[in-house]
Each structure stands twice: as structure tokens, then as C-alpha cells.
Image 1 (cartoon, rainbow, N blue to C red):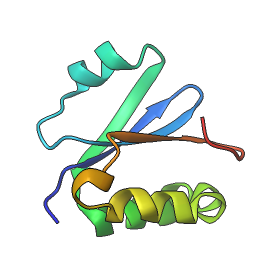
Image 2: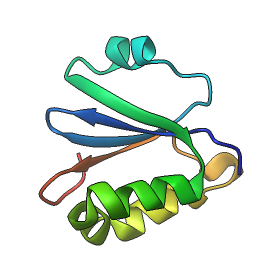
Image 3: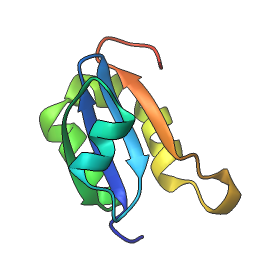
Length: 89
């Protein structure tokens, strides 16, 4: 899989999104509570980053994260929102 995944950090939580050419400015325009972003990354990079930076979020949202990053074709959603302390946005 190409490096097209980003982790966007907002005041409310984390957003996994797709887009190899996305820039910080793009994220600032889309997410008003944008703080920072990491990427682009491939599948392993996303999982490694969650494991190192947000292991609790990875544990709580493991299935959601894996489903998002492993999706193919028409099953690909443009983003998935994660809260820091449980539940999906």
C-alpha cells in the first residue's frame, strides 16, 4: 500500500484520513480544531505510530483502525474519527 494515510490530531481526538498529497493547510481548512498531523504513512507506519504514541487509543479502537487502513476499493472511507477516551465521533 502506498503512503497515503495521515493521522490528524485535533482538540477532540484523532482522525485517520487518506490523501497522499494532503498538506497541513488542507487539514487546517477542513478541521477547525486542527492541531497537527502526521503523514503520509503506509499501513505499518500508522500502526507503529499508534503503538508508540497512543497505545490506549490503539487498544480501544483496534478493529476500527485496522478496518479503515485495510479497506480496498469502494469500501474505503475518506476518514475515521477517534476519540481519545472511547467511542467514535
